[in-house]
Length: 114
Ligand SMILES: [Cu+2]
Image (cartoon, rainbow, N blue to C red; front, side, top):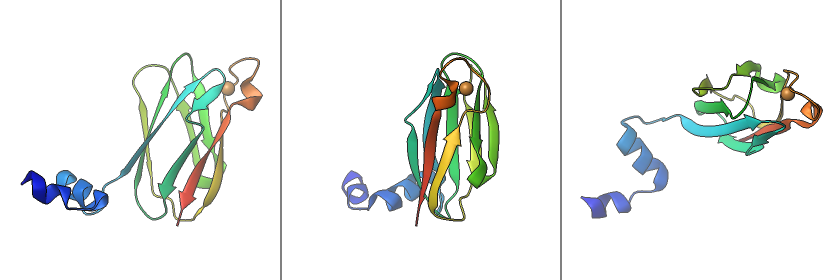
């Protein structure tokens, strides 16, 4: 059994374990003054994304105009954003809740690959 699973490619293995042929791509970003970590995440076009956002300190914003995302990231339990990217590209992310000196530089990107 274990040997059989090891022979499957990663995506097929995930599908087998998840019971779905198209599992969500799980990625996460942590917000803090004045960064997103990691500041860049990569996802595949046309596949559902579950983006887990959490804040280490205070309320931050999570705005991705190119993907139609405008969310808040309160401290506490993670916020899960679900979306399916329909176009490839680099989509800038920025915090749109003023969080102090340095706020203007609080930025990142979601890279959607073909
Ligand atoms: Cu901010």
